[in-house]
Length: 377
Image 1: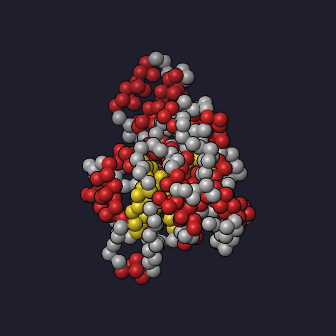
Image 2: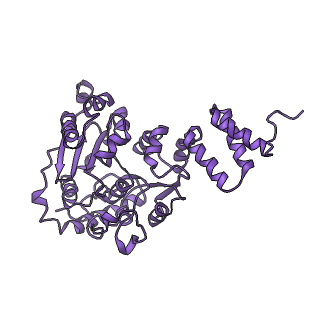
Image 3: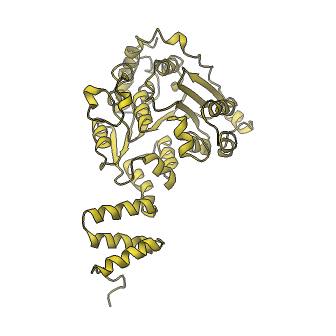
């Protein structure tokens, strides 16, 4: 069992992080006391494979995007998991975690990305069927631990608690210089909730739920099947579980009332909110299409992510037709034709198609007059 303060020797950035180290360990130790009945049933975790820099340079064992595309594309359910098992075993391990969860670990360097997702979403959102964060990890030679669920479970499972308990007991996270926890939606909840096992870790959560416990989030009516799921026990309330984290980045659309209310529950000086207005309900899918997701994770793993960096990365949305259409739709709803015409003309100047040109002509026919772009004489 992990004793309080056992991570006192872990190297963390100065300041706030150090003071949370012992607190986080006490939290882990406290939350582990009721897991004893489940731990004997959890699959044993193989010893971590340790590779030197020379090993990595000399070894031909790598898993590329093409590997995922060739092996995983088109597979479903257990067939997909079996294929992922074969890919992961060369540089790490693949482990089932009870009946509804699995972990795939690729060991390459002291930088680790921990991602959460369901295997249904992985192939629905990524053409290569690669877990979120894999591209950033393989492009930079980083390690990657993917937690994968069968369906939307929010990872509320004693087997998952036991798996992370064992990682903590084995000192797994202490072997890494930098750790990033990532997830979106229900997986964003998990990324925040389980980040407590790695004090000082960076958390990137897209549209996360803080909890689905009725006493704290009874107003969220989107997930009726989760009503009886326990969110009050171990690793339960995500805003409490980030207490020992480093920087926590919460991305959400403030026009979505439920997402905004959950985001507001993550309230601490080290929590950074970036409001992604009009980027639709599936923010992760939008970021993937725009090519912004992996650069954001790379910045987080480099320790460079900030609200300024996020704003710079998301500037690509200005070239994203679906986003521009939403902006124009919102301006139409607000009856602001002059502003709509300005947005439309700007997008046309950057190569927009005939649909935007036709809309600008409609606005001009309705009497909207934009100032000339020609310099005044």
